Amino acid sequence: MTKIFLTAAAVVLGAAVALPAASWAQTESKSLTRTSAQKKVAKSGSAKTTHKLAIQVAENNPQLMNLALNNARNVVDYYKAKGEEVAIEIVTFGPGLHMLRDDTSPVKQRIAAMALEAPGVAFIACANTQANMSKQENKQISLISEAKVMPSGVVRIMELQGKGYSYLRP
Image (cartoon, rainbow, N blue to C red; front, side, top):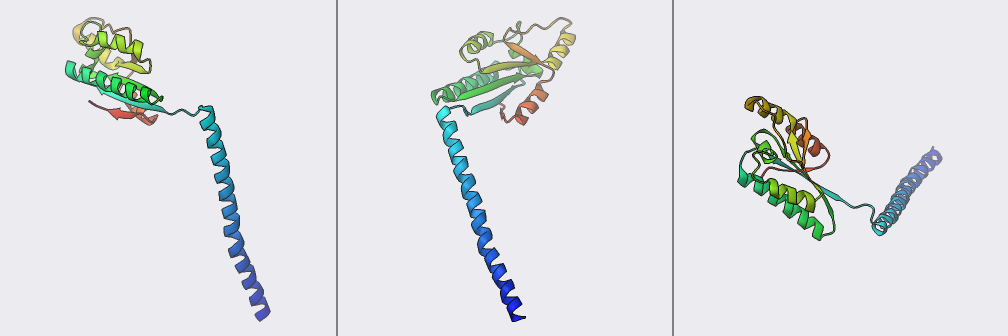
């Protein structure tokens, strides 16, 4: 019985020493592999991070619209100086759609210039709001050429947040 007990103790002790060693070897191997892969990516430059920002405009307020454009410009300039990419969507809905309306936008010249200077900035118009405004005003609501129409502005913000976009409501 003592011999069986000693043999069992030796097996348990051997396993206790061998398992952490095997685990360490696997961890070390993975760590070395990961580091090598990271070095390859860093050399190739193919793993650039794109910073993503969704900006909400839901008020017919020229100061707020200008603030949203200033925020977008500042973010673009910041990451451009660092050599990093940025994607920004300015999403308008409700009274904020006036920002992208051809007949009422107080900032359409700024938007036209920004669209040329910063192609990573998109201007999104809510189709629900556009349809409701058309019905209320009994006329077709025209948008500036830079506007991209999405079915719902609120849903678009939700989708962007699901894709990792940061959210800003100036």
